View 1 (cartoon, one colour):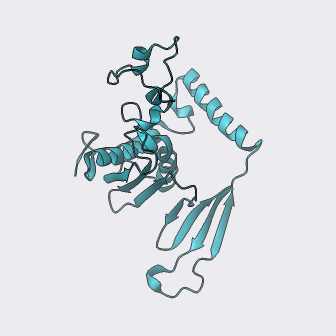
View 2 (cartoon, helix red, strand yellow; view 1 turned 120 degrees about the vertical axis):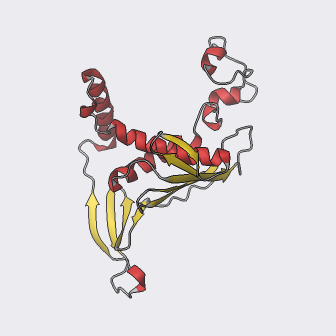
View 3 (cartoon, rainbow, N blue to C red; view 1 turned 90 degrees about the horizontal axis):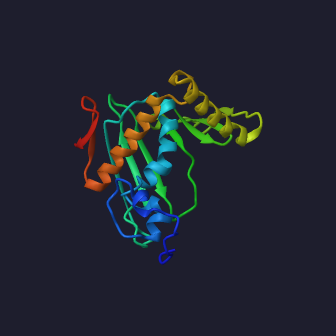
Length: 220
């Protein structure tokens, strides 16, 4: 797609909008997620979905500190966003440390989990399981035993689940009330704050801090 001509029906300047003005580039048009001018990369594309469920489950708000690290290891095709990327966050008041890994050049998956000193909760479709933990190496003979299983039950399958979220969103727009949303606006804010702290840390090559008073990101 590198040399594809610009479609006659495309207003390139309008497509760029407030982004820096650059000559027509088919790579930027088709693969816009690979450029900082238009995208937040893996963090805002994929990590946002992972971090949101953890924020909800752990009743978190904005992070305290965060950073991102990675590089372009595989697809050196002109992009400036890393193709392999990791995110680390620390939450205030001795809150959890959260790691989200994005090794996009390898498809071997790792289950999402919440690790505590008493047990580990592992998200395993179609729900989650809880396993016992051997805290402080006390020799727990039941270590690693599954003690609870939760299975998500969907009526109509995954399609109905996703369609239900769209229906809910559209209904809230029509009513003008955020109270009708399955996902509160504040939850979206907390998740976006988290991935942006990591992205800013990656781009500045620094540990970044979320400043609660000003609602901004600053070097730690």
